[in-house]
Length: 530
Ligand code: ADP
Ligand code: GLC
Image 1 (cartoon, protein in one colour):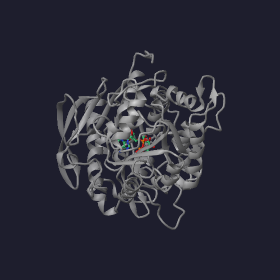
Image 2: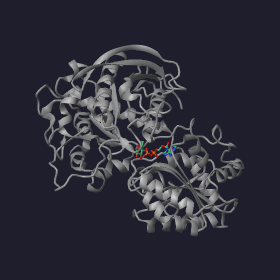
Image 3: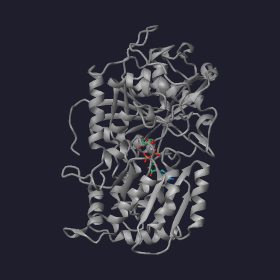
Image 4: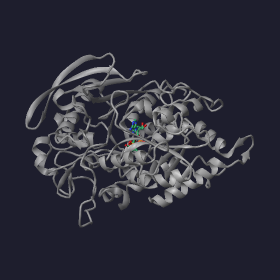
């Protein structure tokens, strides 16, 4: 991409609990590791602030200093280390507080959240503010999900962190509204937030404290990771109880699709693949398929397509829809590989299916990045039966590797997949979509995919499937366009074209918040995966 020379670089500070390749539990890590590099290519000066976890391989770092933060009613000293995001000159500041972050997990262990997550991420928010103030002088503060949502709360309510970062616009990106960071009000003194915020027009939410609600209220601009998801979260079905609030703030809500880092996800250079390949020379895939079949104990059969799911195993991802459909998929003549971790019941069901259908279904429970690459380097169909999907990155990676996506028409899946029967000259088909979150609808789409896979018909020199696969491999979902959209939004904010939250101490919020209209609170997750 050409560098735009503007002379002055916009100083952006991005704060995230996970940043690939330092830490990752899902797509947020990928975004926080790749968006800064894309912004830097557009002439921004970006700093990333993230915790130092016990096993973080930081590369070269040096100590920047230390500072006190106040959580749990006591002062704690945190250390700051400076490093660089690999293959870039993006400055990275690691926050070191061993008792809080040097643990086996990021959000929890053995499927359970750490019970002290509210104070861990309160500490992170305060330390990030101090680091941004001392070493970044940001012109834009870009925060992500509930884990960073106390940043605007600290800066714009209560004691205001001593007036730090006054006037700096804050952008909150919501990666998943299902995780809001909810805790009991008894935590309020431990978090050091203003107790008067415990009010339905503040951070109170069905009798609990809600971090993300604070982030939404006190940030200037709310973005989410696809245009469709920005619409969906304003509806009751996808709003997890915050749809009314988001509707009330829709003029400050924007959907920007995530991008893919093709230096990391490229079958031509991928070091995890047994054989690399490209759209005009696919022969390496055959070797990769043999290897994958060996890893998952699948029968060798050249004609049989491999369907794959690489995903968290939970309700959001529709893992139950997939597992309910395994017999039908196998009956239709496909093999299936699943790589994932998540809900222990779903993990157990998946393993039981692999035992019942050996040679046809292979399951690995775990988070294994090299294996995820190997699966994409060999599979034919990527399965994404998500009930909701803010963006979804794994299917976009798969497309570059020639894995045709089959997904539910929701969020980012709907914005990136064009169904086989709905392609147009402008937007040709690149996969398969289904609408209802049911095994029947999923299986019907799978039947259609298998019919195209098996078809002997040709278009030009290619079979229908080869044409579809070629289309997937050559589509461009890189960050370039999305990073430009972020820059446009940041500039609009700086120029006052998006309403700003500029509260004077003691002043009321400049908007009305819709009161909750239901009898019972919604089922958002307390914290865990962002
Ligand atoms: P989400 O963030 O909701 O989990 P995304 O599709 O946006 O979904 O991103 C998931 C990321 O995590 C992708 O990089 C995907 O390859 C990776 N991933 C998910 N599950 C696993 C796993 N079990 N092992 C390795 N990588 C995984
Ligand atoms: C969340 C969403 C996923 C999205 C990712 C990165 O984890 O579930 O759809 O791609 O964040 O934005």
